[in-house]
Image 1 (cartoon, rainbow, N blue to C red):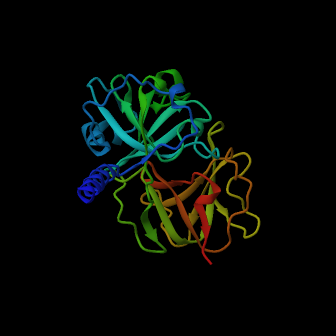
Image 2: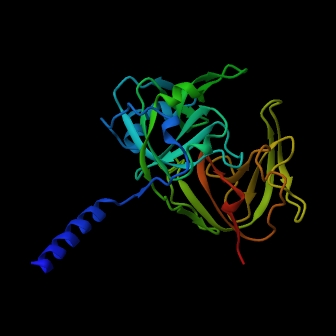
Image 3: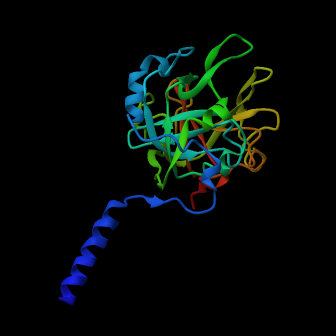
Length: 296
Protein backbone atom coordinates (compact mmCIF):
# COMPACT_ATOMS: atom_id res chain seq x y z
CA UNK A 1 0.00 0.00 0.00
CA UNK A 2 2.82 2.39 0.91
CA UNK A 3 4.50 1.58 -2.43
CA UNK A 4 1.32 2.49 -4.35
CA UNK A 5 1.02 5.73 -2.39
CA UNK A 6 4.52 6.82 -3.43
CA UNK A 7 3.84 5.91 -7.06
CA UNK A 8 0.70 8.05 -7.10
CA UNK A 9 2.54 10.94 -5.47
CA UNK A 10 5.34 10.74 -8.06
CA UNK A 11 2.76 10.69 -10.89
CA UNK A 12 1.03 13.83 -9.59
CA UNK A 13 4.35 15.65 -9.21
CA UNK A 14 5.32 14.66 -12.74
CA UNK A 15 2.08 16.01 -14.18
CA UNK A 16 2.46 19.36 -12.37
CA UNK A 17 6.09 19.72 -13.45
CA UNK A 18 5.25 18.84 -17.05
CA UNK A 19 2.75 21.72 -17.25
CA UNK A 20 5.34 24.30 -16.22
CA UNK A 21 7.28 24.82 -19.43
CA UNK A 22 8.28 28.32 -18.36
CA UNK A 23 10.00 29.63 -15.26
CA UNK A 24 8.18 31.57 -12.59
CA UNK A 25 9.22 35.22 -12.40
CA UNK A 26 12.23 35.76 -10.18
CA UNK A 27 11.76 37.86 -7.05
CA UNK A 28 13.11 41.39 -7.18
CA UNK A 29 10.72 43.78 -8.94
CA UNK A 30 7.52 44.54 -7.03
CA UNK A 31 5.11 43.87 -9.88
CA UNK A 32 2.19 45.23 -7.88
CA UNK A 33 3.54 48.73 -8.56
CA UNK A 34 3.32 48.41 -12.35
CA UNK A 35 0.78 47.45 -14.96
CA UNK A 36 -2.93 46.80 -14.72
CA UNK A 37 -3.82 43.68 -12.75
CA UNK A 38 -7.45 43.97 -13.92
CA UNK A 39 -6.47 42.77 -17.41
CA UNK A 40 -7.57 39.18 -17.94
CA UNK A 41 -6.54 36.93 -20.78
CA UNK A 42 -9.11 37.05 -23.61
CA UNK A 43 -8.85 37.17 -27.40
CA UNK A 44 -5.08 36.64 -27.49
CA UNK A 45 -3.63 36.61 -31.00
CA UNK A 46 -0.09 36.08 -32.20
CA UNK A 47 2.19 38.94 -33.22
CA UNK A 48 2.26 37.50 -36.74
CA UNK A 49 -1.55 37.61 -36.88
CA UNK A 50 -1.56 41.16 -35.56
CA UNK A 51 0.91 42.35 -38.19
CA UNK A 52 -1.04 40.56 -40.91
CA UNK A 53 -4.30 42.14 -39.77
CA UNK A 54 -2.74 45.61 -39.98
CA UNK A 55 -0.32 44.88 -42.83
CA UNK A 56 -0.87 48.22 -44.55
CA UNK A 57 -0.24 50.18 -41.37
CA UNK A 58 2.96 48.37 -40.44
CA UNK A 59 4.47 48.39 -43.94
CA UNK A 60 3.60 51.87 -45.24
CA UNK A 61 5.35 54.95 -43.86
CA UNK A 62 2.91 57.50 -42.47
CA UNK A 63 0.13 54.95 -42.01
CA UNK A 64 -1.33 54.03 -38.62
CA UNK A 65 -4.64 52.93 -37.13
CA UNK A 66 -6.24 52.75 -33.74
CA UNK A 67 -7.04 49.23 -32.60
CA UNK A 68 -10.75 49.13 -31.76
CA UNK A 69 -11.23 45.38 -31.35
CA UNK A 70 -10.78 43.50 -28.09
CA UNK A 71 -7.38 42.06 -28.93
CA UNK A 72 -4.38 41.08 -26.85
CA UNK A 73 -0.88 39.74 -27.43
CA UNK A 74 1.23 37.76 -25.00
CA UNK A 75 4.95 38.17 -25.51
CA UNK A 76 8.38 38.23 -23.90
CA UNK A 77 10.51 41.37 -23.53
CA UNK A 78 13.67 40.88 -25.61
CA UNK A 79 15.22 44.35 -25.32
CA UNK A 80 14.88 47.50 -23.23
CA UNK A 81 16.88 50.61 -22.28
CA UNK A 82 19.29 48.93 -19.86
CA UNK A 83 22.42 50.52 -21.40
CA UNK A 84 20.83 53.44 -23.21
CA UNK A 85 21.03 52.13 -26.78
CA UNK A 86 17.26 51.73 -26.95
CA UNK A 87 15.31 54.88 -26.10
CA UNK A 88 11.70 55.06 -24.93
CA UNK A 89 10.75 51.69 -26.36
CA UNK A 90 10.98 47.96 -25.82
CA UNK A 91 10.83 45.03 -28.19
CA UNK A 92 8.67 41.99 -27.50
CA UNK A 93 8.54 38.62 -29.21
CA UNK A 94 6.43 35.48 -29.29
CA UNK A 95 6.85 32.25 -31.24
CA UNK A 96 5.64 33.91 -34.46
CA UNK A 97 7.33 37.29 -34.60
CA UNK A 98 8.26 40.53 -32.88
CA UNK A 99 7.14 44.13 -32.55
CA UNK A 100 8.26 47.35 -30.84
CA UNK A 101 6.29 49.24 -28.21
CA UNK A 102 6.92 52.96 -27.76
CA UNK A 103 6.76 54.22 -24.16
CA UNK A 104 7.59 57.76 -23.04
CA UNK A 105 9.57 56.68 -20.01
CA UNK A 106 13.15 56.07 -18.95
CA UNK A 107 14.39 53.25 -16.76
CA UNK A 108 12.00 50.74 -18.30
CA UNK A 109 14.50 47.94 -17.68
CA UNK A 110 13.82 48.28 -13.95
CA UNK A 111 10.31 46.86 -14.21
CA UNK A 112 10.46 45.10 -17.59
CA UNK A 113 13.76 43.20 -17.64
CA UNK A 114 14.58 40.95 -20.56
CA UNK A 115 12.72 37.66 -20.36
CA UNK A 116 9.62 39.09 -18.66
CA UNK A 117 6.41 37.75 -20.17
CA UNK A 118 3.60 40.29 -20.38
CA UNK A 119 0.02 40.40 -21.60
CA UNK A 120 -0.85 43.53 -23.60
CA UNK A 121 -4.37 44.86 -24.05
CA UNK A 122 -4.30 46.45 -27.50
CA UNK A 123 -7.74 48.09 -27.65
CA UNK A 124 -7.34 51.86 -27.81
CA UNK A 125 -3.66 51.81 -28.76
CA UNK A 126 -2.35 52.57 -32.24
CA UNK A 127 -0.40 50.32 -34.57
CA UNK A 128 1.80 51.56 -37.39
CA UNK A 129 5.50 51.93 -37.99
CA UNK A 130 8.56 54.11 -37.69
CA UNK A 131 10.59 53.92 -40.89
CA UNK A 132 8.73 50.64 -41.59
CA UNK A 133 9.58 49.17 -38.19
CA UNK A 134 6.28 47.80 -36.82
CA UNK A 135 5.37 49.69 -33.66
CA UNK A 136 2.57 49.94 -31.10
CA UNK A 137 2.08 53.33 -29.44
CA UNK A 138 0.39 56.63 -30.24
CA UNK A 139 0.56 58.93 -33.31
CA UNK A 140 3.40 61.43 -33.63
CA UNK A 141 4.12 64.20 -36.13
CA UNK A 142 7.68 65.54 -36.37
CA UNK A 143 8.81 69.04 -37.26
CA UNK A 144 8.85 68.13 -40.95
CA UNK A 145 5.22 67.04 -40.87
CA UNK A 146 6.01 63.32 -41.12
CA UNK A 147 3.67 61.05 -39.16
CA UNK A 148 4.51 57.78 -37.46
CA UNK A 149 3.62 55.73 -34.40
CA UNK A 150 5.81 56.63 -31.47
CA UNK A 151 5.97 56.52 -27.68
CA UNK A 152 2.74 56.57 -25.72
CA UNK A 153 2.42 58.35 -22.35
CA UNK A 154 3.70 56.13 -19.56
CA UNK A 155 0.38 56.38 -17.71
CA UNK A 156 -1.43 55.01 -20.75
CA UNK A 157 1.05 52.15 -21.04
CA UNK A 158 0.56 51.19 -17.40
CA UNK A 159 -3.14 50.69 -18.11
CA UNK A 160 -2.48 48.40 -21.07
CA UNK A 161 -0.18 45.69 -19.80
CA UNK A 162 0.02 43.16 -17.01
CA UNK A 163 2.51 40.52 -15.92
CA UNK A 164 1.79 36.86 -16.52
CA UNK A 165 4.12 35.84 -13.69
CA UNK A 166 6.43 33.93 -16.01
CA UNK A 167 9.88 34.47 -17.46
CA UNK A 168 11.10 32.94 -20.71
CA UNK A 169 14.53 32.84 -22.25
CA UNK A 170 14.46 33.53 -25.98
CA UNK A 171 17.57 32.29 -27.73
CA UNK A 172 18.81 34.48 -30.59
CA UNK A 173 18.20 32.92 -33.99
CA UNK A 174 21.01 32.86 -36.55
CA UNK A 175 20.66 35.81 -38.92
CA UNK A 176 23.78 35.05 -40.98
CA UNK A 177 27.29 33.67 -40.65
CA UNK A 178 30.12 35.55 -42.33
CA UNK A 179 29.37 36.38 -45.95
CA UNK A 180 26.37 34.03 -46.10
CA UNK A 181 23.26 35.92 -47.13
CA UNK A 182 20.45 35.94 -44.59
CA UNK A 183 17.27 33.98 -45.23
CA UNK A 184 15.23 36.24 -42.93
CA UNK A 185 12.19 37.98 -44.38
CA UNK A 186 12.43 41.70 -43.58
CA UNK A 187 8.64 42.07 -43.34
CA UNK A 188 8.00 38.97 -41.25
CA UNK A 189 11.17 38.57 -39.16
CA UNK A 190 12.12 42.17 -38.42
CA UNK A 191 12.32 42.91 -34.70
CA UNK A 192 13.39 39.43 -33.66
CA UNK A 193 16.36 38.68 -31.45
CA UNK A 194 19.16 37.33 -33.61
CA UNK A 195 22.88 36.84 -33.98
CA UNK A 196 25.24 37.77 -36.81
CA UNK A 197 28.44 35.74 -36.71
CA UNK A 198 32.00 36.20 -37.98
CA UNK A 199 31.85 39.74 -39.32
CA UNK A 200 34.29 42.67 -39.17
CA UNK A 201 33.79 46.42 -39.40
CA UNK A 202 34.17 48.02 -42.84
CA UNK A 203 32.98 51.65 -42.70
CA UNK A 204 30.41 53.84 -40.98
CA UNK A 205 27.84 56.59 -41.21
CA UNK A 206 26.89 59.43 -38.82
CA UNK A 207 23.45 60.97 -38.32
CA UNK A 208 22.26 63.84 -36.13
CA UNK A 209 18.47 63.75 -35.70
CA UNK A 210 18.35 67.40 -34.54
CA UNK A 211 20.25 68.94 -37.45
CA UNK A 212 19.31 66.19 -39.95
CA UNK A 213 22.99 66.10 -40.87
CA UNK A 214 24.33 62.85 -42.31
CA UNK A 215 27.90 61.82 -43.05
CA UNK A 216 28.47 58.70 -45.12
CA UNK A 217 31.56 56.59 -45.85
CA UNK A 218 33.20 57.30 -42.50
CA UNK A 219 36.45 55.28 -42.47
CA UNK A 220 36.98 52.64 -39.81
CA UNK A 221 40.28 53.23 -38.04
CA UNK A 222 41.49 50.23 -36.03
CA UNK A 223 42.19 51.14 -32.43
CA UNK A 224 40.50 54.56 -32.76
CA UNK A 225 36.94 54.24 -34.04
CA UNK A 226 34.27 54.06 -31.35
CA UNK A 227 30.79 52.58 -31.35
CA UNK A 228 29.29 56.05 -31.69
CA UNK A 229 30.41 59.63 -32.30
CA UNK A 230 29.71 62.06 -29.42
CA UNK A 231 27.46 64.21 -31.63
CA UNK A 232 25.92 61.58 -33.89
CA UNK A 233 24.16 58.28 -33.73
CA UNK A 234 26.36 55.92 -35.67
CA UNK A 235 25.93 53.00 -38.03
CA UNK A 236 28.79 50.66 -38.89
CA UNK A 237 28.76 48.30 -41.85
CA UNK A 238 30.54 45.00 -42.35
CA UNK A 239 33.07 43.68 -44.84
CA UNK A 240 31.15 40.41 -45.12
CA UNK A 241 27.57 41.74 -45.46
CA UNK A 242 25.86 44.10 -47.95
CA UNK A 243 25.75 47.80 -47.07
CA UNK A 244 23.27 49.16 -49.61
CA UNK A 245 19.95 50.90 -49.04
CA UNK A 246 18.12 47.69 -49.86
CA UNK A 247 19.04 44.62 -47.85
CA UNK A 248 22.01 46.30 -46.19
CA UNK A 249 23.07 45.26 -42.68
CA UNK A 250 24.39 47.69 -40.08
CA UNK A 251 24.98 47.87 -36.35
CA UNK A 252 23.40 50.99 -34.86
CA UNK A 253 24.62 52.72 -31.70
CA UNK A 254 23.06 55.79 -30.10
CA UNK A 255 25.50 58.45 -28.93
CA UNK A 256 23.70 58.18 -25.56
CA UNK A 257 24.52 54.49 -25.14
CA UNK A 258 26.65 53.66 -22.12
CA UNK A 259 29.24 52.04 -24.39
CA UNK A 260 29.20 54.71 -27.13
CA UNK A 261 32.78 55.86 -26.44
CA UNK A 262 34.27 52.36 -26.32
CA UNK A 263 36.63 51.33 -29.09
CA UNK A 264 35.28 48.98 -31.75
CA UNK A 265 36.83 45.53 -32.05
CA UNK A 266 39.41 45.29 -34.82
CA UNK A 267 38.86 41.63 -35.67
CA UNK A 268 35.84 39.45 -36.30
CA UNK A 269 32.90 39.50 -33.92
CA UNK A 270 29.61 37.78 -33.22
CA UNK A 271 26.84 40.34 -32.66
CA UNK A 272 23.62 39.59 -30.81
CA UNK A 273 20.79 42.09 -30.89
CA UNK A 274 17.34 43.02 -32.08
CA UNK A 275 17.28 43.06 -35.89
CA UNK A 276 15.18 46.12 -36.55
CA UNK A 277 13.84 47.20 -39.90
CA UNK A 278 14.93 50.66 -41.03
CA UNK A 279 13.05 51.13 -44.28
CA UNK A 280 14.61 48.35 -46.41
CA UNK A 281 17.77 47.86 -44.37
CA UNK A 282 18.58 45.69 -41.35
CA UNK A 283 19.63 47.67 -38.29
CA UNK A 284 21.06 45.69 -35.38
CA UNK A 285 20.26 47.22 -31.99
CA UNK A 286 22.55 45.71 -29.37
CA UNK A 287 21.19 45.83 -25.83
CA UNK A 288 24.49 46.00 -23.97
CA UNK A 289 28.20 45.66 -24.63
CA UNK A 290 27.83 42.01 -23.63
CA UNK A 291 26.06 41.44 -26.96
CA UNK A 292 29.44 41.87 -28.73
CA UNK A 293 31.62 38.77 -28.67
CA UNK A 294 35.11 38.92 -30.18
CA UNK A 295 35.94 35.79 -32.17
CA UNK A 296 39.19 34.24 -30.95
